[in-house]
Image (cartoon, rainbow, N blue to C red; front, side):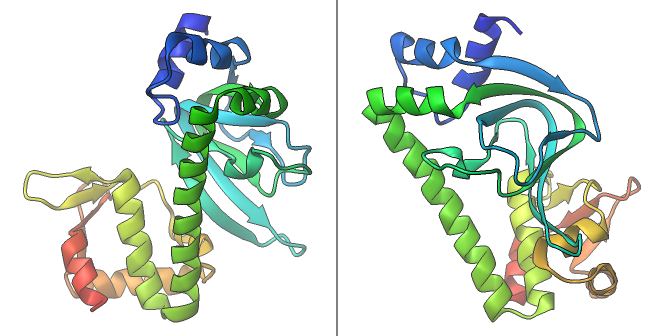
Length: 230
């Protein structure tokens, strides 16, 4: 990918919007583009923390693994998202795995050089902190859901969150959530079992809280799901 293409990709990220030509040029100068095949890893948990990645195409799964090898999905990321958010001003290793679910093209920015640019550009630093703040709020809400809600409520909140992130709004006001998350994926996101998710989704279909179309995609109304939490 040429420098002008990298500029076009990064300019679409809210993090870099509003930067003048000189400011964005500093980011472009230290950026490169790379492609990853499906099934490969961008980095492994514990690898030296060296780069921040911006997704141009593809899909990335961020997950942790404990000593017994049990997987906990942190996020499924797509075009227009960056990772890892802990990369700035932090030393050590990557706190999770980044697996390529679909062939991906990423813009790679070395953290050490990016930090120098941030120090020289206070406005950009403020934007970075805002993005980090949004992630902290998201993580707090997910932690509260695990502590305060039962599994049924956790699954509802997860479906609402995934719909807000990845859902496609339909003409009748409902949303289509494509069948790209398996029950095992959903279970890993909230720390429960695949069987529990399967039983819960079956019950929700029976209660007509969710539906599926001919492609197996989930059809749901977030307002209806929110009412279940009241």
